[in-house]
Length: 635
Image (cartoon, rainbow, N blue to C red; front, side, top):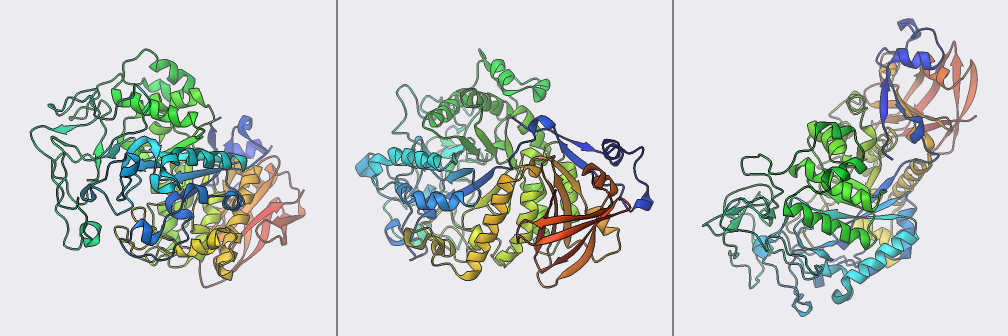
């Protein structure tokens, strides 16, 4: 069930604690202090969801050649079958509840599978040699690269789904509703299902039930390549001739309408039409605004008997197909480029089939967050533009920790729905010089990111061992692990250790980092306080005149079962000591009279002490560089 939260003022907190009035400034309690309180019906006896994003083709690859623009034979590729019980046990040990197997649907790539009836893809409209997983070629099949026997590729993925379920984790895959590969052709579609565009009227720019937009009378032209780019790195290929047969041309995936897109357009894809006319008006029934307050059952009923564009039906059928195969949810690419009414329609149908389906969407415009959650029925959105971007600046020494407090205040009504992460396939690796240059700088950030809200946490494979993505792979460049090329990930391969998945080749520093992630995320998975209330302690402690500064962040998380105080230190070179202050109102909520109380620190196991004097709490804090402490009150 979806969690709702409310922001309580200081005065309201005092009333809840049994006080006659809010504390005065003389109590040293900052007037901006607020508590975010979870509805009691949603308070659980366990912690939060943890999503492990696996880039599937690379995850289990043990080949270390790493030749730029290398072929599958040269650089290797991981298979579904390689993700065995040992691999899954290692992922589960990180507290994982859901694995997002990134890049599973069959996408355009440069390899010869003609023996299996699969057409060759043209490198002029494929990014990299292994291809972008976001240029899907067949939604009813999976990437043949990932199968030991490409003829049995779907069965091998189904076996992986079953193994994942046996280890108590759920399976997510990508759905990319905004665009498909220019070469889309489904060999595996069920009887009666037509390919995207198969029934389109290509003589017009737009028709409601066309799947694509067209440029009538003009043929597609390959982009002009930059001076520093050559298709396949200049390697010969019979189809690498600067031509691609598409007449009339279709609009490109990012909405570019020219028959000849630019190189920085999504030229390898074509945009899907959802009944949005070229002038931006809608050719379908709008969802009434009051449906923002209605559940998925009401949304499902609203769409019954309604005429909707053909593309809506196609994606309904695609997602239902994967649900029937055992997939537990979806990560939606660039959801904001598709109208919210479509999401109401699609997600209501998904929830009708599986009410517990996990629906995660990529939306980068904060002004749209509430629409896509409340009208579009998304369970979770990336908290990229607000929390991640602010936290990245803190990690780089370019921004204050107060910005994180402000984000939490702005997101108070939807914080449960805003998934937190420090890395994913689109973002730079923490250890890369372009980001922080040191994987350890992710440690205090991960504590804050994981524990500050009730939302799920996402971990990208290799993050837990400090992978820096330091090499250019071909189309993919350093600082981000390539999603376009056949490649191996050196730090992660030391965890894989030739297929043992035991970390036997990790350095001590890498093993220690993984142990940190394992302790933190496993704790977050089990801690009931993380489904409870939040009080920021930052404003109070900034005003206290101690050594506490914008390089630290402190907050409390608590429920009836568990009370936590979290403090993190973002300075990479200097230790810090101060008396952390806890306000009288918080001590009253925790029903703590004056005295001394034991605290058990959750990351190190060391005991500490909370002292309550005149109703206010104090903890003597000493933090090493990049250190964090997670105190649990011992009752």
